[in-house]
Image (cartoon, rainbow, N blue to C red; front, side, top):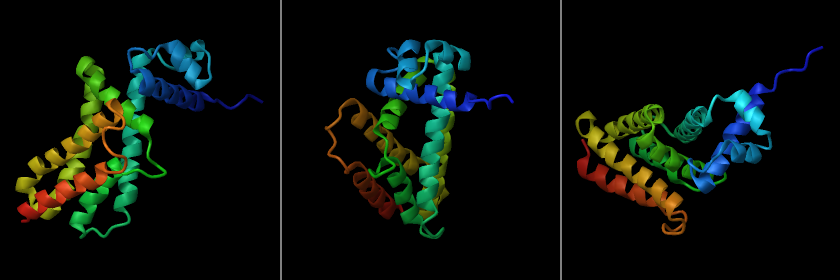
Amino acid sequence: MPRPSNTEERRQQIVAGLLRVMSERGYERASVNEIAKAAGLSPGLVHYHFSDKQEILLVLVEQLAARGRARVAAKLAKLAPEDARGRVDAFVDAFLSLGPDADTSAVAGWVTISAEAIRQPEVRAAYEQVVRADLEQLESLVAASVGKRKARALAAGLFAAVQGYFVLSASAPGLVPAGTAANTVKRMAAGVLDGEEA
C-alpha cells in the first residue's frame, strides 16, 4: 500500500521556514539553504516543492492574509452587525492587539513583504490584492458610521496607521510601548469617526 503524500505538510514547513528566516534576516538573506535549515528539511526538498524563493514568498503572502482575515472574522463574529463603532475597533484589534494569537514574526514578515512589493512586480500584485481587500473591508466598516462618501479617506488613514505600527514594531522593536498600538489607533478612530458621524 503506497504511503500518503506529505506534500502539503512539507510545503507548510518550507513556508514557515521562510517566515522564520525572513523575520530575522530579511528576504534577501533568506537563502534556500537557510530556509531548509529553519524548516528542518534538505535544500533538495525545498527545490522539489517550490520552483524558487519567490514562489515560497507568494504562498506566504496568501497565508498571512488568511491568518489576518481569520482573526478579523473571529473578532467581528462576537459583535452585532449594528455595532458600527465596535466593529471598526474589532478590525483594529485583529491587526494590532497582543494576545495568544499575536505573532511578531508574522508582522516582521509582512513588513518585509511590503518592502519586496516595491522591488518585485509579482509580489506587488499579491500584496496589493491583500491590502486592497483589507482596506475595502475597513472602508465598509467605517461607512456604517460615517456614510460612504467619507469612508474611503478615513479608512485609508486608519489603515495607514495600522501599517505604520507594523513597520515600527518590526524595524525598531521597543520604540512603541507594548500593547499601546491598538488602543492608540482605536482612539484615533473614535476621534475621527466622532467628528465625521453621518
